[in-house]
Length: 116
Image (tube, rainbow, N blue to C red):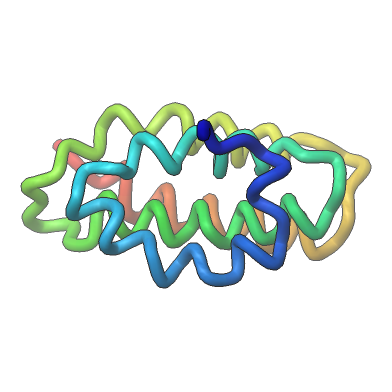
């Protein structure tokens, strides 16, 4: 059964950061990134904040070490950046969403934009 945004409600997303390291190692980062990035654009702020937190964990997983990385993280840079940027540019949103988006964008800039 394909994952969709309704399946990633806050109660399900709370344990997702525990699973993400195993997902990246086993090659399923692409499978989980699509619904997580889609959930970042959700209207309900609780889903969005949890999706942004999971997105931050996804960033840490695809690029855990900025000096050495065997995992090809480059295909994830633009989709993650664009999903977060859409939240940062939106003027009408919850304070918690803004804070999570700022925190996640900091991780993206530090971890994903430092490659040569």
